[in-house]
Image (cartoon, rainbow, N blue to C red; front, side, top):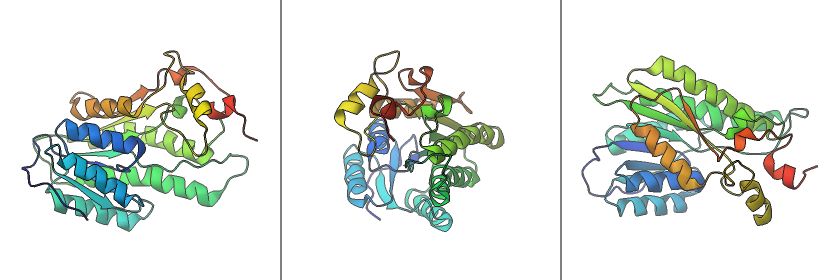
Length: 264
């Protein structure tokens, strides 16, 4: 556990960003800290990166702390949330950004991989939302933002377990919005192709990123700005913002990277 800057609590409150030390999660932390949110930077294995992000956030004058947790572990996730509350006093928001993204197909299921995807991408976000909602109700509303994927609206058979977990998380967003109102809003943001995945080449990424009506898909900053909007949009709940340059409007038989460079 690493230190908090010696500042007063933010008027906006504290937000937990899972996977906040890397990739989209990092961009979300940086943007929210720059806009006055105190932040918990969650990490699993990227402790040094998470602390670097937290230190930069403290440099912006907000409270920030890096805390580690294996979100595939039910008990560890509960203990992690309790640590967050102990560190910050109360939590106003959770951004569920951390995710497992491994290739599989539904015609040859890998059940161990399936379970890992469901634990990290689905069970942990639901658990953290429930823990947030269970705090003593406060005057201000709380908010959960789930990071899903445009694949939910543009199905293909690639990344089967990952996609199923995100389809379920989109449904969870709507169901929990009904269950948790009025104290807790539950929303989601659905990126398109945003960063390199796995062994994707620069050329493949650059070409895939342009296959949208806008000629560009999402950037990490685009996603961070969408999250920031949802956190302050008091009349919005149960809604997913698709931030992908319109990628979901182009039906494809394979994942976009494999349309460009086929995978066996």
